[in-house]
Image 1 (cartoon, rainbow over the protein chains, first blue to last red):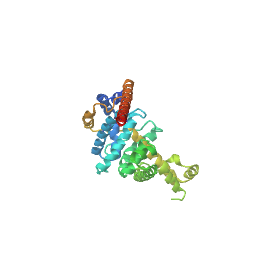
Image 2: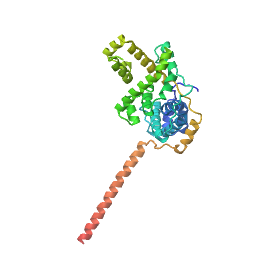
Image 3: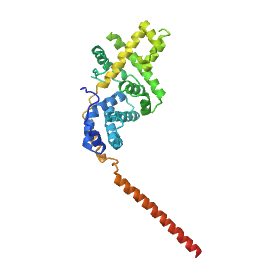
Image 4: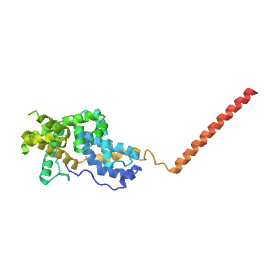
Length: 191
Length: 117
């Protein structure tokens, strides 16, 4: 599986053209953002087929909503919100969740890694985390993914998952605890 | 686990190492178990953040399926309204209202005339 950096760049007028109904411009946005949308969908639903459907539906919803996009948030952020809503709706449609580890997923150090040693450490634990996330329940995993990977606020998470802020905090607490437990053997092995 | 380790573990799960109070930090400095726990959470947090930088390759069929799916909505749902169009709409609304009021007045006057006759 190929890996790409999230937050791809895009020509500045592409979103505006798509907003005005330019289908080709929107197609270009799909090309640019499809991998990050698919990645978020995979992390939320843990099923590649379902994630493909979620990605497709999310882009179609985005196209319909393009005239309402005012640019208050980044296009990718807006797209992420639509993806989360779509994934959350789809979980009730298809209640089949595969908990198998996602193959060939490796982490790459990002710019906010503190030093090379730490960056290597983060890269090494990435696949273990992806795998451990699969062991969490759907509702807990969604909160952990959105908070710890995508840096959403508790309020945003609560709003999009239709839960209270307290519930979001409780699920995050539970999820991190379970992840810590699931990763304990990996960490002991790494020491 | 010692009694003073419990709030440290709970805080790490809830808010991460940044949520530790000064008192908790002093305890962590003296407790090997909590030091290990803080380190484990640091590695875990950084590992989670590192996942932001990678993406799964979307299947090849996603793009054509999306483009097929958006064909019926190729025309934007709402066009941006021009100021001129808004003025014409407002004038039309005022004229319609005045015409309705005038017609109503005429009907009332005619009825009154019939009654007096």
